[in-house]
Amino acid sequence: MKPLLLLLICATSALSLPMNAETIKVPIGQQSNQNGEISRPERGMQKQQVLQLFGPPVIKSTARGTPPISNWKYADFVVYFEYDHVIHSVLVHRRLDKTDFDKAVNIRHKGE
Image 1 (cartoon, rainbow, N blue to C red):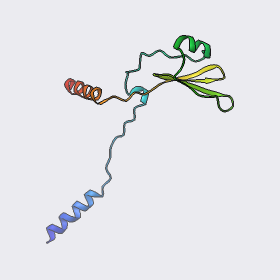
Image 2 (image 1 turned 120 degrees about the horizontal axis):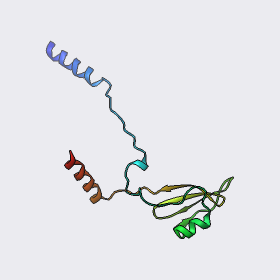
Image 3 (image 1 turned 180 degrees about the horizontal axis):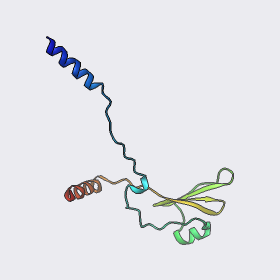
């Protein structure tokens, strides 16, 4: 009876010990280089220049706030404007489909 009680106490105390795990956070822009070579508008460009170089956007938002901030959505990126000047452009994250994911996993495992 005593060995069973001792085993039960040890098992219970082992379950109550804190577990440690490492959390790795990878910024979304570094998760893949699938869009790495896409050209996009640079800071300071005017709306007219963006239209000439990249064509019309898929969606244009209306300006909001003070100063007025608007954005244009393209297939691969979003451009943010303050008044008529680019303040930032951001790549659109593309989710891997199942076949791309399987290829990436297979390539990784072959290299190990």
